[in-house]
Amino acid sequence: MESFGLAALEAMACEVPVVASNVGGVPEVIEHGVDGYLHEPRDVKAAADMHSRSCPGRTRPRHGTNSAHQCPEKDIAPMNVIPLYEEYYRQVIGTVAATHA
Image 1 (cartoon, one colour):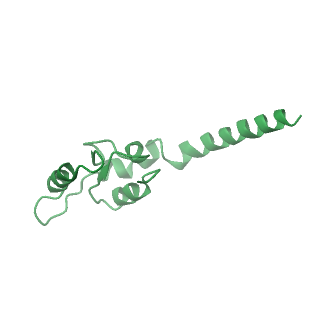
Image 2 (cartoon, one colour):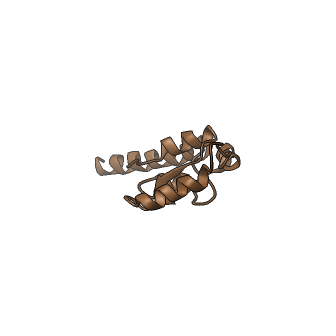
Image 3 (cartoon, helix red, strand yellow):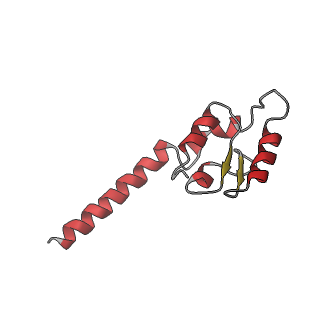
């Protein structure tokens, strides 16, 4: 279980097909059928089938390459995420300051 899906994001950046469980923050990183494949936790058969589809034979397809390298356009890009964190911190600081005033 991974809260963000960093391993999946790193694999996509390396042009490795991603097959992952549909848990935690992973679905925020992987769009099923576009960036990789998601299966339900503990569904070993589905995971095996998806691995077979994503890596036929001995050659590794370049699945997910386009979407992984378009990361700046995704919601997880630093230019999109950092302002959200900054705004959240401002709200928390404002709430704490108001509570202690």
